Image (cartoon, rainbow, N blue to C red; front, side, top):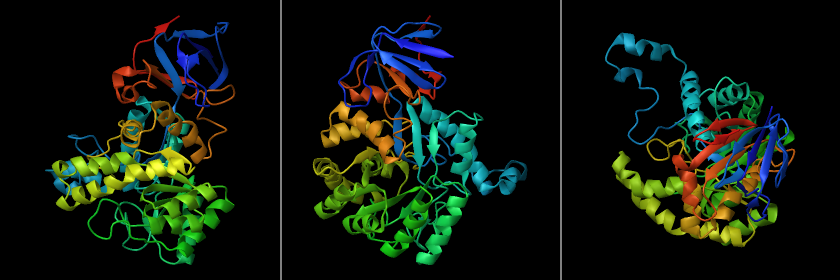
Length: 419
């Protein structure tokens, strides 16, 4: 089965300027890119006035958690339901099953927003993100390509301990838990190197030690898996880099020394402006404690500058939305991160798209699979009405998304002219 996308402009993710080009998709891959390609046996999708870009990549999501603003959680707690009959199935329903089923809903929402690859960095119970990854890969549910962590690893009482993360103390115990998650099929190991950002108490204080994180990195790297670390403060970032972590999640308060360490060792900064901006401006009205907004405002005074400094120092940067935070970062709003990096950090729209495509693929070790529109790569495409290099907000508007193509399968979000 072949499809020819004809009549649009192409931003291919390689760094080339946008140019008029057709894209031929065959058997799930990009077969050919060029001007005036012959139709042959292909079905034709006419996309005049549209821009074709690589499918977007979100390096930091919580795909089995979250909800939309004003929308109820996927599952109520059993004790909030009015009758035993309504609550009974929840009492016996495994939490991992609940999260996987909720994740199916969120995965479809994420794909429809133009994201064909995401990395889940913890929060789902009982390997629900791994189960969801497999369900998508087998065609049971609709969603993006998922790289799953199988949860996360925190010190006892550390950040995220109550959100499905496994608690572990000491290098030997962290090593054992890492092996357990790898055995379950984790694509990436998630570590908690610091306390949360946007909190009034010990914001970003280091948690897992260098030795504990090094044990996890050794085990993961032996099996060809990468390691990411939640790290807010400069000290926690340096600890994670020293331990061998591959990607620093958030990195909000990095100093120059930390950024220079990352640049020298090729460690990625996964930029997540969206959750902290929303914590600063929306948390209180969404029912969060009063001590969330003020620290987040303070953090956001520094964070955009950190991103600018990272880019200027040659730190590899990719983007994550942190979608899945209750009431603050609903799935499907992932592209807001691109808009924020443009508006708050002064990055050009074309550069922001590159950070969410080719750079994201490199951060996730998927550059041989996706991230650019080129012959032989997976046919992961986003067809957008208009020019997102002139107006990045087009990627945030459902009405502007004409089609999402995931491994050659077209998911239409709007009408296109077919022949």
